[in-house]
Image (cartoon, rainbow, N blue to C red):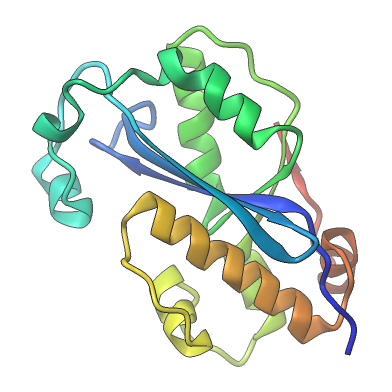
Length: 188
């Protein structure tokens, strides 16, 4: 069996409200040679410090938990250093990339060259017989246990779905996986 020796960083944001620049938590899981080698999690104080009740119900993060945390702008250099030039992988990447870009704009940071791919799109093409492609149903089907709507846990589940797809398709890299599925990488 071929080893899926991919390098990427899986990310997941939780937001305080429907506003895309209201990130309150970011998780990142670094994968090298097909293995998880590092995990990072940042709690973020959104500005303004407003949380909608529906978002609190989803992830359980409250204003009190992030009141003393740094803003996205204050920790971006650390986040950027950890993400490096990796291809970013997210489940429903359009959401997470939109949050990242909105936070960068709001805090006056230039948008770096970025590549990203989406495990929801990858899963749809890898396992077309599945009926549900949400993070939770896919993770359950693949036997991945995680605490849903915790950014670090969701990032780890996303990384494991990506790895499972690569193994299933019997490819050796992220590029090979995308080619085999006829998916093109997003760029920002």
